[in-house]
Image 1 (cartoon, rainbow, N blue to C red):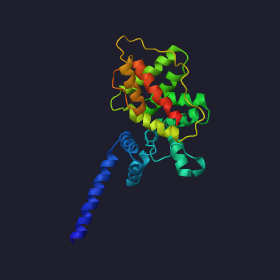
Image 2 (cartoon, one colour):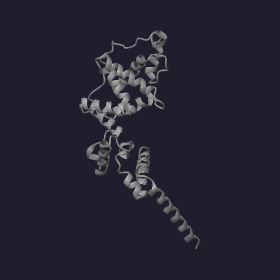
Image 3 (cartoon, rainbow, N blue to C red):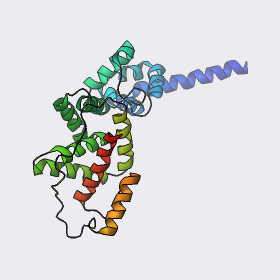
Length: 248
């Protein structure tokens, strides 16, 4: 008898929960599911199975736009992908998922020689706030832009990224390095303007024997600079680290 009463109480709670969910506006349901999707694909599947309202909300483009890509290969092989995975990734791409845009841009620029399209995708992802895309795009501009305005934009983007709250340049570099090393590289980044410098700071401490020793030690250990470099020398230092990735 007590177990029957307990089951009734559980059913009441379930019904109460379902009533609350049904009462929520659609845009709030979508926002909730999108937040779940941005953190865990496993939890997204559980949410979709929990009720019809969440299942319907999960089909909104906003959810696909923010879906986490950690469960998918950086460079997917189309012949190993199932139809469900292909369909899901297609929806993410169509919905403007920045991680998909970044990954496609990386493969296009560095591996499949679709350089212009790859650069455009990296640029779009970078300007919309994807950290690794902004890192790579800024490095490419600093390394390969012939005009001063283009190079300056690269330095500005890198400085903006470095000063962003919660962003570690070392972690960005590490993730980009892992990505690059997972591809067949056919287009390496080579600094085409090594002799030119945008540094015009009178207080920059990157000059001098002692600081050059420190600079060399940083390069050897791949650590972030400690703030003694000006914006442009700091960018040049990071560019050296980035180019070293292609020397493996």
